[in-house]
Image (cartoon, rainbow over all chains, first blue to last red; front, top):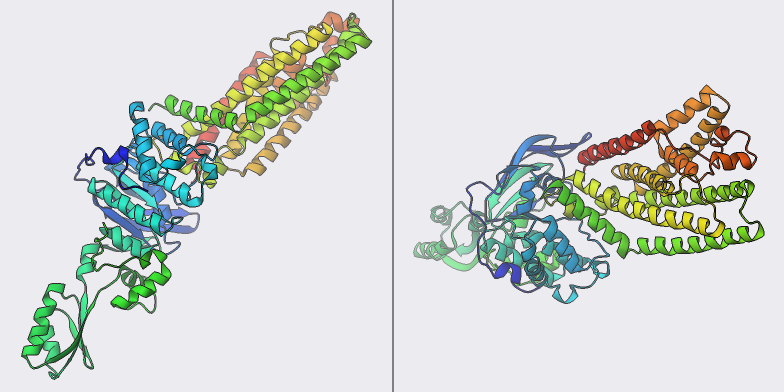
Amino acid sequence: MSGIGVGHGADPTRAPASDEPAIETRELRKEFGRIVALAGLTMTVPRGEVFGFLGPNGAGKTTAVKLLLGLSRPSAGEGRVLGAPLGDVATRRRVGYLPELFRYQGWMTAREVLGLHCELARLPRADWDREVSGALDLVGLAQRSDDRTGTFSKGMQQRLGLGVAFLGRPELVVLDEPTSALDPVGRQDVRRIIASLRDRGVSVFLNSHLLTEVERICDRVAIVDHGRVVAQLAMADLQREQGTRIQVTGIDGLAEKVAARYGPARVEGEWLNVDAIAEAEVPALVRDLVERGGAVHAVIPMRHSLEERFMSLLGVDGADATQDPGAEATAAAKDPDAAEPASTDPKATR
Amino acid sequence: MSSLDSIVIIARLTLREAFRRRLLWALAGLTVLIIVLTWWGFSRIAEVSPVTGPVEMLAVSQVLVMLAFMFSFVLAMTAVFAASPAIGPEIESGLLLAILARPIRRADVLLGRWLGLAVVLVGYAVVAGYLEVGAAGLATGYLPTDPAIAPLYLAGEALVLLTLAMVFSTRIASVAGGAIAVVAYGLAWMAGIMGGVGEAFNSDVLRGAGVVSRLILPSDVLWRGAAGALTPTEDVLRGGGVASPALYKFSPFSGAAPDPIWLGWCLLWIVGLLAIGIVLLRRREV
């Protein structure tokens, strides 16, 4: 995939600004017979942000996506998308969507599929060529544009689906597991594309299982479990919740008191653990400890990962409060994409 | 985008699919083959026994009605097998998800699919039907009662089956929906024959069964209309030894132009069933 496509990047116009949230739901409920898929979903997705929607299998994520897009009707509750009630047909003109189950007419070429969606999205006919070429460039399918999609691999079909979702300058893009069939290079491309959408003021609703991916691209996440949002937090807040482990000797009894000025602290043997301390304040803490006669042997920055917060919120055993840099190896083993260089700043890859 | 625009987009997509998937080519090829074989067969009949008298005409008309029945069967099967996977299976496979998320109503998707397939079926029925009647006429010189309208009745019958299968496809798996539609078609045909027997022998029970069957699935109304249009005139029938032309119209080799009320019911039935299909699709979880 290239960076920004012709159809999108040529015009830097941002999406229309609005005070109304991109998505807002209140106690949204969905039942399938006796099965409760959503038990009361309440969340707010601000405009212009990349919003991660996380949860374990069966939490109701895809059901929520379908409700937001009007593909399914809520049993109770209410919601608005781009200021319009759920299910409003006209609003769908301003929304792009990549389904989790993506499949396109195998007898059509990629160019024809995109052309069909230009027509369905009511784009002016004069813009179709530009939009289609731009989308093909954006998702890296320009070389295969005249091949039938029936000959495409799953990954290529997902790229095509992304192109379809990005057609026509949507104000909101809903991506349901957008990288499930992509290789690491494709995933990185998707992150770049999503970042470019945010730069243009487009709101992105990202439903994904890949926590490292979400951590790197999202501004805000909602964690849903058993059909309810159990936490909604800004990634910047999560990042600020870092801690520090300091190995210090010689000031028994004083260390905890000194560190308490910087954040919640506790001592475990020679180790002083300070939670929620700003990175910039660590040198000052070390200086204070030394001035009071402490001998500092090691300083290890700790940070909460989204995965740990996720596990903790879902009450999964073994979830540590913090993660040290060595834990990246574990994450990489779970998610090949995580093998890319990690950054302490989740937004550094944008 | 108005509803009509949306319907046209989906209908055009359906037509393109029929063209690309070679459905139209297959139908065209088979039609040419059948027309050639028909012409050859009727020519041989005319060679053996020139169709000059009413007896020969009666015999030719029965062969023509049998051919028309085979043709109506092919049309009905094409309608059922094209419509059965048109909605539900495409939702389940994900094919329609991206389309339904666009500013288009579900009703427009259903009506567009119906319209696209209807154009294929009606076009095929009309072109192939007239060619068939023309080939028989050229080879034998036989002119049925109303050759111009017979293909239109067959087209109408195909639309009835198309509508039934399309409505099934909103909720039922394509194999099950297709099988039910085919069985229903067969039962309606059989019930039509029984209704005819009831008319001929003045049996209220059989007559009533035929009427109920036609109310539930009016495909036989149109088939009997097509068969009637291909039957010889009363003079020919009498000359051919048929003592009672009025009774002959109830035989499996004949029929009669349906009452306009029944034609109105066919139209109402199609519209009503499409409305039911729209409601079912609207309520369906995708």
